Length: 250
Length: 207
Image (cartoon, rainbow over all chains, first blue to last red; front, side):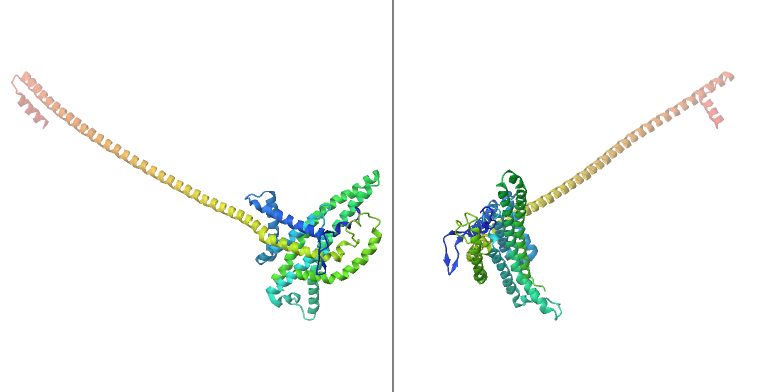
C-alpha cells in the first residue's frame, strides 16, 4: 500500500451509503476535505479581519495580500464592471488554493486531483460566461464566434474554429488543474516510494535512497509552487473568460 | 449552476462507470494479493480512482454544497470584513495626510506671520532710530546755534569794549601830545601857551 501511488486518490465513504434519486451522494473523504478547505479559508480570513489593526500583523497581512491579490486581478482584467464577480473569483481561487495546499499534507486527500471536481468548476465558469454574455449582449453575444473583417469565404471555417476554441475552454481549464495535481502527487508518491523500497534493501539501499529523497524534497517544493500557480491560473483564466462576456469587441 | 454540472455528470457517468468496473475487476485480480490493505479500504475495486464514475455524483453534490457555502461565506461575511479593514486603513491614512497638510499650512501661515512681524519690527526700529537721530541732530543744532549766538554776542561786546578803550586811549594820546607840545613851546619860547591852543595847532597841522 505504501508504494501504491494511486492509493492516495481513493474516495472513501465516511458516512454510510446515502442514496437520493438513484445517486450515491455519501459523505466521503473528498467531501470532508472540501469542508476543511472551506473552513480553513473562512477561518483564516475571519481571523485576519477580526482585529482590523491599522498596522497589520502577520495573519492580517496574509489576509490583506490575499484579498488585494484577487481584487487587483479582477480590477485589472475586468475593469470596474467586474466588481460583482470579485467574490466569485475570490471563492474559486481560494477553494482551489486551499484544496491544493491541503493536498500537500501527507495522508490528506487532494480534492482537486479528481477530474470531476475540476471539470465541474470549469463547466460552471464557462456556463457563467455564456449566461453573463447573453444577459449583457443578448443574442448579439454570439458574434463572438463571427469575427468582423474576415472574408466571407473563410468565415465558416473561422467560426467553426472559434466555436471549437470556445468549447475547449472548460476542457483545458478543468484538465489543466486536474492533470497538474494528479501528476504531481503521483510523482511525489513514486519518489517517496523509491526511498522506502531502497531503504528496505539494507545499508547500500539506504545510501542509494538519498537521491530519490532529495528528489522528493525538491518535488515537494515544486508542488507547493504548482499548487499556488494552478489556483492563480484558474482564477485569472476565469477573469479572462468573463472579460469576453462583459466586453465583446470582435 | 448546479443543474448544468449534474446533467453533464449524468451523461458521462454510465459510459465511464461500465468502463471503470470492467477495468476495475481486472486490476483487482492483479493487485489484490500484492497489497494487504486494499481489501480493508472499504472494498474498493482498484479502478483508477479519478476515473471511477460511481463517485462522481457524490463529489459533485458535495462540491456544489461546499462551494456555494464558501461563496456565501466569502461574499456575505469574510470579504466585506476584509474590505472594511482596508477601507478603515485607507481612511485613516487619508485623514492623517489631510491633517498633516493642514498643519503644514498652519505652520506656513505662522512663519509668514512671524516674518511679517519681524519686518514690521525692523521697520519700526528703523523709524524710531531715524526719528531719534533727527531729534538729536535738531537738539545739537539748536544748542550750537544758541552757543554761537551767545559767543557772537560776547564777541561783539568785547570788540565794542576794545574799540571804546582804543578811542579812549587815542583821546588820551591827543591830550598828552597837546600838553607835551604846549609845555615844549612854552619852555622854548617862554610864552605861555594854553593846552587848547596847542591842541588847535596840532589839529591845524594834521589837517
